[in-house]
Length: 457
Image 1: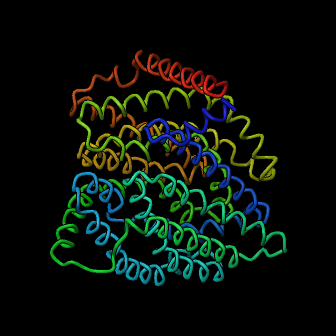
Image 2 (image 1 turned 90 degrees about the vertical axis):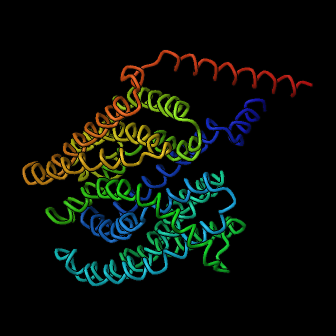
C-alpha cells in the first residue's frame, strides 16, 4: 500500500519532475501502442501494403507541420506573457485555421496525383480524401495540445497523444478480426478516431476556448502578438518538420513502397529511445518560459545531461534486443533493414538531446538561434540524403540523418557558448547532477517513510 501511495503522489503532483514522469509514462505507452499498430499493419498488408498505408497517412502530418505558422508555440509563449488576454489569443489562433485548412486541402487535392505518381490510383484516391479531411483535425489537435500545455492540463495533452493511436489500434484489430484488409477502411478508422479524440479534447478544454463572439480590436491585437512571436518560431518549426519528414519524401520520390514499408517500421522502433527526451522537451518549454535566463539554462542543461547519460547507457544492449524482436513481431522480411535500425537508434538519442537544449532558446525568446541551427543542418542533411540514398538505399538515409543529428547538437552547444557564454564543459558534464539525483532519491525515501508511518498510524 505504501508503494502504491508513493506512486500515486508522484503521478498526481504538479511539479516539473512529476509532470515529466507522467509525460514519460505516456510517451512509453504511446510508443507501445504505435509499435503494436505497426506490427498489426505489417502483418495485415505485408511490406508493400505497409508502405502504401504509410504513404496515405504521411501527407496530412507533413502539411499540418508546414502550415502551422508557429501558432501552437506562440500560443504557449503569449499565454504566459500576456496575462488576461487568453480569450482573444485562443479565439484568434483557432479561427485562423479555417481558411488555412480550406486552401491547403484544395492544393493537396490537386497536387497529390503528381506527388504520388508512382502509386496505384486507389492509393492516390484514398490519400486525397484522407488528407483533405484530416488536415483541419490535426491543426486543431496541435492548438488544443498547446493550450493544454500552457494551462498545465497535461491530462488532456497526454490524453490526446495516447487516445488517438490507441483508438486507431483498436479499430485496426477489429478490421483484421473480420478479415477486412482494405486500405480505405483503415484510413477511415484513422480519420474517425482522430475526430472522436479531438472532440473529447475540445469538450475537456471548453472553459478555456471561447470563440463565439469576435471582438475586433482586442482579437486583432492578440493576432498580432500571436503572429509576431509565431513568425520567429515558424521558420524553426518548418525546418523541424522538413527535417523530420524529408527522409520519407526522398523515399517516396526515389525508392519504392516496399522501401517505405521497411523504413517506417525500423524508424518507429528506433524512436523508443526518444521516450524520455521527448517528454522533457514537451514539458520543459512551458515550465521554464518566464524564468530568468540563468535558471532556464541551468534547468534545461541538467535535463539534457541526465537524459543523454541515461539513454546512452540503455541504447547499446537494447538495440540488439530490438532487432531480435523485429524479426519475431514484424516478420523476417523486415530484417532486411536491420543495419538502418542500428544507425537510427544512435541518431535518435543525439537528436532528442539537441532538441532539449534548443527549447532553452525558445524559452528565452531567441528562436532565431534554433532557426539558424536547423537551416544549416537541413541543408547538409538533404544534400547527404540525395548523395547517399541512390548508392546505399535505406542505410544511406539513416547515415545522413545521424550526421545531421551530430551537426545539430554541435551547433546548439556552440550557440550556447558564443551567445550565452555558457562553458562547454559545464553543458556536457556537471558533478552536481549526481547530487541532484541523490537528493531526489532521498526525498523519495523520506516521502515513502512518511507514507509508511501514516499507514501504520
